[in-house]
Image 1: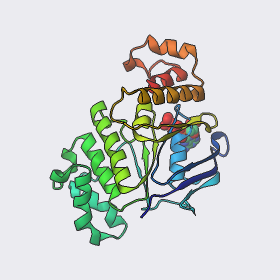
Image 2: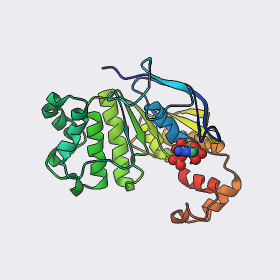
Image 3: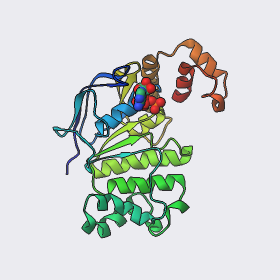
Image 4: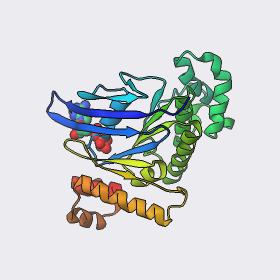
Length: 281
Ligand SMILES: Nc1ncnc2c1ncn2[C@@H]1O[C@H](COP(=O)(O)OP(=O)(O)OP(=O)(O)O)[C@@H](O)[C@H]1O
């Protein structure tokens, strides 16, 4: 099946009966097979938008179209991965991966598809292990295999790697991008981490907050996503950082506060703008 095209058409969303304006009239397209990142400061509406796009929430107004069909709820054709992989601890790796197919009534495909998926996420030797015995990164790979087994057209990622160490996170970012390209899956990813957006996505939608609006859409045109020292990477990083700062309304004081503060203290006792700056770095 060819990759899906997404269209976000005039999406607005409010919470608390209109008291919180989370999103205001968002319009953009995601091309078939494209990987698109949603970035912006905390509270700008990234998760709200992703949940709406995946059919897990109904917007106050507007709609998402996937290949011309209005998204009105969850579907096996578009799947979401979260920060914490929700695996069944009493089941083996293979059984967890099979669940995606079981839930969609495709049990006949399990015998062929599960080993294929485990191969893809480099866990072929772990099929009979209990998921509890796996590392956080390996568990996220199991969740990925489970999501991909029913051959979705779109994969939504809500900061799925943020709980992992830098090395594991880096490997997964590259592997998920590679797998999405191999399987011709359209990818939409929410991230706080601008490096993650650059490694994984061809474009980033940068949101400003209160209410969430599109501040910029940045092209990330890189030939080589493995080497983070190339001039292209540095240029993309600079463009995205500037767009993020503009959208977040970060000022000189925020930079100063952050520059004098160890990163382990970045979230505590810090003004919101400074905490955002920490997220950029
Ligand atoms: N259930 C809710 N009820 C009321 N307000 C909410 C609810 N969920 C989110 N909001 C508000 O909507 C706005 C957008 O929230 P959202 O979680 O989508 O932002 P975000 O960019 O994903 O934030 P973060 O990066 O911190 O996860 C924020 O002002 C938030 O406080």
